[in-house]
Image (cartoon, rainbow, N blue to C red; front, side, top):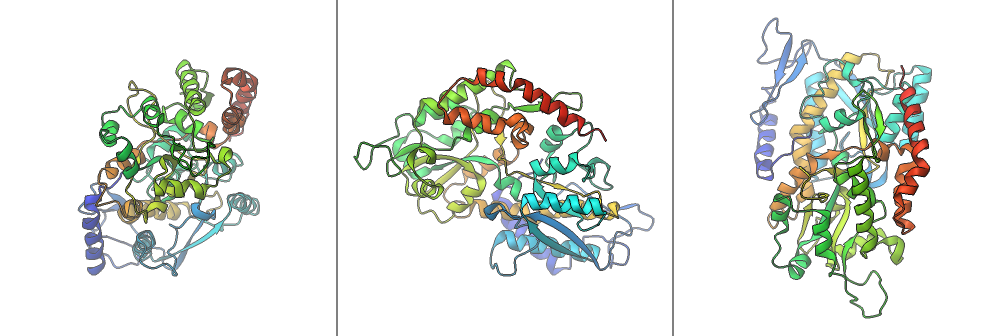
Length: 491
């Protein structure tokens, strides 16, 4: 699970990083042909640690690969592209870009390597990796691709089981344990995520709100305390927004220039459903998966999620002839109070003049034990192609990259995520701790098993609550798809 970093420690981390650079990283033992300090003769592994980090990174003796190019293939998808593989030389004074530079420099010095990155669309990544496997071409050590595409590659035998890759330890905090818990197939895990990338955080769902506008409408509500007291439920959210809509321009027609309590999309039906802790398809406890939406609580959650989506009026682009930019502008000027969206959108608010805050998605009810953070269909995973010739080398470098990403990249991401509100809304940091540590991964949604991803949206678009009959229509297809899915992993 990604271990989040307190904002108050960011300066300390930065100072530590500068100190390490100034002293040449003398506390980092290396081996092989690299200059080594602090090593012990005959030691099988050499631990790397920092003052803030108790966990150890174990580097095998002799792990120095002078002149090797460590090749990473990442995702090219506009705002959701991999900006965290290699630094962009054209970008200046950007915390994330600087952190990528520092991390890569550390790895390159430690192992004598050069990190090389390239980006392709998700579809092209699948085709590229398949073609490389077919031709047995060792072209990439590591790939980062949408989880749905990673499943496709795993099914076709193109990816290594990460549990069997030497020197990768999935129990370390720099890997997201939630992925291992939900995406392990017959004791095999083909992709994962964690501190090694910022895209996993960018793809998490959050509830943004205009703090100034909210305080004006609800001056007596301490929304952060509501979250901490675990009273932040779907019902409570509904009670807040029910009387916020207002015809500001007086034209008698709902439009983008009015005030709206909340802005969302039809896809948010899955947000409320997953935020309850329920999934469409989940582990069956036997190494496989099962259709989970027939459980009594799941049915109740779905019913009330539809009630919320259909019984209240929201700013929806499909209804108001508006754009995503209109939604963002409305939130920034305070005519939208809440917006359900990804963390990536939240990072676009850094220059917002009004105060804003970040909240987790609401609980289903007060009986729910903890918060769950839904993830968007763009969620990515890291994987290792079967064409890698030296699996031990790839495992060593990948584990070290994840470790140092936790040291450099994650603090920088927090800095960027909250830049501009650090001094005016410190409690949002506590909210990020909840959000980033509570991700939930739904195979049914991410892999669109049985067409569920689209089916849920169609219910909202059709303004119908007839979910039970809809499930009856797809039940056989769902179970057949899951059965076929599991059969495809018989290797």
